[in-house]
Image (cartoon, rainbow over all chains, first blue to last red; front, side, top):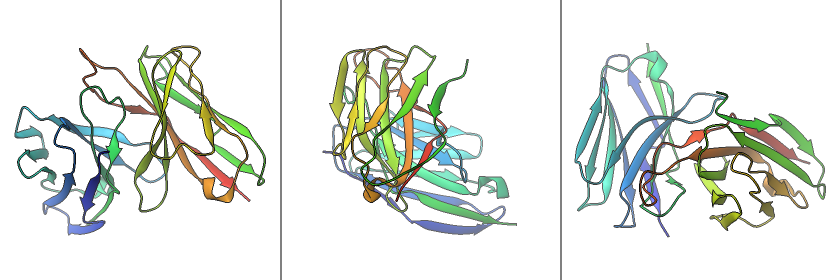
Length: 112
Length: 116
């Protein structure tokens, strides 16, 4: 089955800096890659997703890049703010598989 | 529109007890799933359903049962609770566009379960 690895497990940045979280996946048939943000004690919520027919997607300060050849995708957060502090999860899935395989999560701490 | 609703939010069980975690969604989503979240391990899939009457196992199904008698409800049953089942449980739902093409998964607020 699919295996998703996520790095780093913790990341501390200064407010205003950029943060990058990387994930690799094992199943070359995977074609849907969402990113979820989970604040302390809350439910995971989708922040951005990308499909395999595009290489990059942006939404304001957040962007995701996908390299299908290398089977990895990354989350980029620019101009970080304290409210970006949370745990971020990458995930992967493919057409016909209704559930997601998640990475182990990255705890991002943005220092004011 | 409540989204995905889970009950209870907190539960303490004794080893060997059974219980049912409830999950309901009002978005008419076809797909529903249960995950458990443990520190450092992300979210792991327990069971999922692609529609009423259809369920399947995920990565960690042992010790859990599910059923899907309606589109809205997807309860998770712990048959005989064990300390290893201490975790936070999340229910999620989503729909697909076309033939099984995935879209956003919406999560419930979670159930924090402790087995002593």
